[in-house]
Image (cartoon, rainbow, N blue to C red; front, side, top):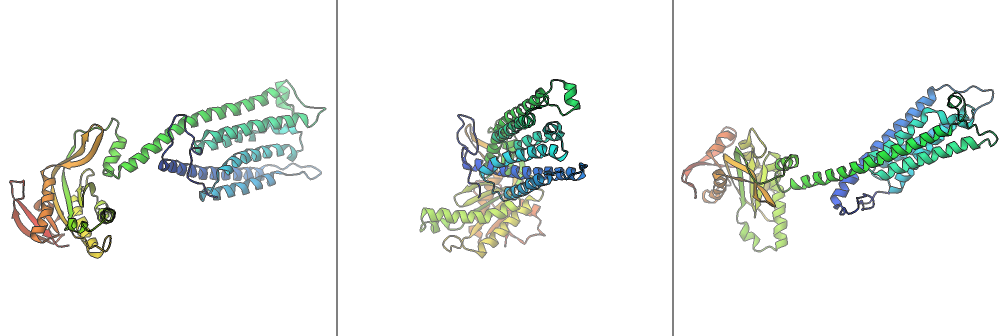
Length: 443
């Protein structure tokens, strides 16, 4: 039985809090599933420790055989723990089994404590003084790993109720001799029962449980907030370059439009040839589907070579290399991405068997990149004359019959010896007074 998608009941919220989005609940569920794996392995370590201690401990010597329930209790506990570990790894722990697990964990531990007086042939009160009781606090603390106070409260309640029952059993098993004392020295040096001391143990269990429950409740709020913020940051990276999303996430002050980062950057601009004509015979749904298929194919080599997608403009792509993330060989990486894109487009079709042709312009120059926009709506972009030049170079492909045109600065940084650049000449592009030397590249 596999856990279904978390419901509001499975992920408790404070009163007044809106329901969490499904993607956030799924992220929390994955965290909880990982916690259950950790809990299972810790429990397995505990039962192995118990087994080793039992094997090394001296066995009582009596004329008659003494019943030894520990192997049976440890065996049952080991079997249950192994099943639990397997289910946890398979993400198949049903909710009801978690409650059963908490109860059984505590009952098996208390049964192990109870069996000690049988093992040594002592009165029932003998088991009230064994240090194994300290493991109760470990089992309570284990439930804190899931960040749900209800499991801690259940573990503490079972432990407290179980210990009270064990005290009641110890003083009532022999009605004529309850072995109750008020003398602390006698309590410490005999099998007598000091009720105050036993109540202190129960009170300690309840106090520790309460403190853990409060701490977990507070920590859970932080967990939910952390998951929401990390999920939002992951979603944000789909709209802005991942480096920008990381900066926003780590920012110590509210993010605002303002100063940008100035750096020499290689700007990559691509556009589809004749796509406007092709799109006239397509439905809006087919158009979007074809564009998304195209963008997915050509974005991969850009990102893999360290480029950051700044904008999708219709069927055009604006990407930058060396901004916002610094790169040593940004011009080389941009050229390699452009060549790979041409190979991809030459080897496949898109949508309903369409062959797409992309023209690419690449320029290297000093630009500024940063968040721009209004107070409540920001976007990341790059500005500068060299950004415009990359777009102009893309358009020049149509005039010169090429697929990739780069500026002289890009060729210089990329390395003439690495790529087969062909000189086209010096041109003056629209909106720019200074001429620029351009080169074609055969992919």
